[in-house]
Length: 194
Image 1 (cartoon, rainbow, N blue to C red):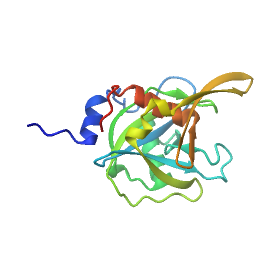
Image 2 (cartoon, rainbow, N blue to C red):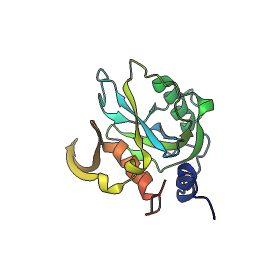
Image 3 (cartoon, helix red, strand yellow):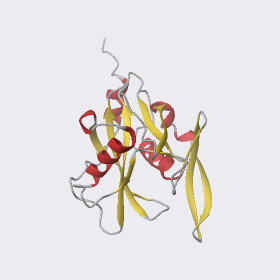
Image 4 (cartoon, rainbow, N blue to C red):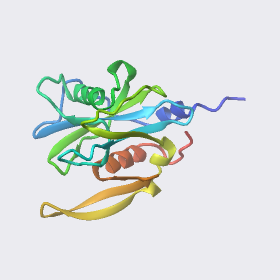
């Protein structure tokens, strides 16, 4: 009798990613990157943050660790790793990058590349007081349930845009973050058993 694969192994076996191209950002425009951390547990989790309410942009929103590419960054992957260190004290040596999702356009005019990473459970993460109010985890199986996401049409800067939204406990997940999670879900096969 064969043993059932672990939740993480099953997730990885069902997911096909674009491999990140070191130092090769998409062309044109302003660039940013986020880290999409999957916590390696028997039942994997998806790590998210709630941005500080004192921030000028996207205050209080649920987000992945990440931000704008600096001139000193070696590439977009370096941007995502640097921002994760700054925002939640997730050190580079604790992260195993397994690929990236297609870049998405943010409402603020950035082309954002999401990098998918596996991280160990129960790390001593600490939120940067200037940038992050909370760090929390959603069971991956719940996060990747496309039925949890609803489309909402918003009027932004003179244009109608469709955004995705969902709730987890008291957290509203919407916009680019919800769109990234939904895209991740679409890349996993219909049977989610992890």
